[in-house]
Image (cartoon, rainbow, N blue to C red; front, side):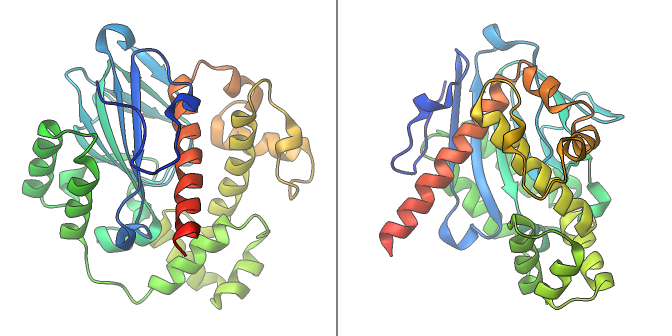
Length: 306
């Protein structure tokens, strides 16, 4: 089994509260790729302990996922079921909580931003939203196959980042004329002060129609959906990381009231936050803690270097 942790200094994997017989690494890509790729991660677990483990991943941005396990992985997103999930797969932008069933072994993931989408794929992000597709239908099959074999043979503690950095650079397309607008929309979505589409249009200098086209093409959904999802996810993640029962004091101040937040929960979770948090979901919680800690440590390191 791999060693838990990160190449980012100052990260304590013991704080992630991983289940027994489980290991996790989260790495950051090279500086020139950080606008395109959010993270690389490896999750490893003992098949004899975790066969048939069920998890409930949250709605997320696109990911490349490589299942390097002897056992299958199945996934449900709303009415869609993938059984098994392709060994090398693209998970599109999702707006619904998912359910996975795994049987131990190694999974590698790569988080992709909207700018990364524009540099890696010619297909619109809306064409694969809330879906999983074989990665070799969007990237050269020989390159995807070679990457899977590299990952299978690699020491994933020391080799993961250089292997994936090299792969991402080799697949990069030329910049689009929309790079700056995509970067700006990412900032708008991540800004808790953004309340509506009108303010987003003003900040980006785009008409509502142009903003919608950009958002659907590179982010997968219209901007209103993404803003609502971002607000809900910030609130839910704060709740989950706080531990204990769902505390509605953690919801964003831009919610009118608790019932407003609960309507969004039904939309994105298909249940209430309280019931979702009460589910046995240790892998997802550990990954959330790891992402938080690695992001903080990486930001601190960046400030120190300045």
